[in-house]
Amino acid sequence: MFVITLTYTVPLERIDELIPAHVEWLDRNYAAGTFLASGRREPRTGGVILAQAASPAALHAVLAEDPFNKAGAAQYQVVEFLPTKTAPALESLLVLPS
Image 1 (cartoon, rainbow, N blue to C red):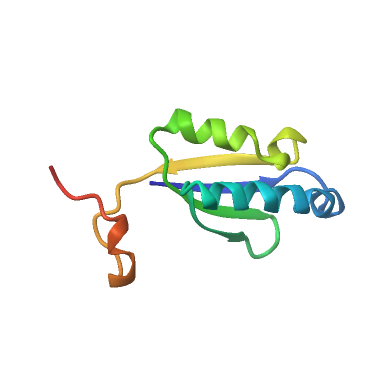
Image 2: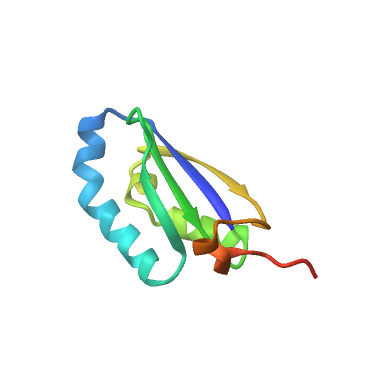
């Protein structure tokens, strides 16, 4: 499991131009099962994505396709973690000890 934080590196006017393509990219990755949740940071300085991927390399390949990334409009921080406790509605995300 991964938490990705995006930090915008360009003015919001440029971000707004890229939003439609970014949303299409998000939608493709939700359909593929890679993304579990996403949204804007508050204040509006970037975004956050909760994702699952086979490996960090696989996730970085997905992030490389983000229109924000292609335009140099955001920086990404990726944190990998193993969820061992969740709310009942999220139990399918648990990583059980081996």
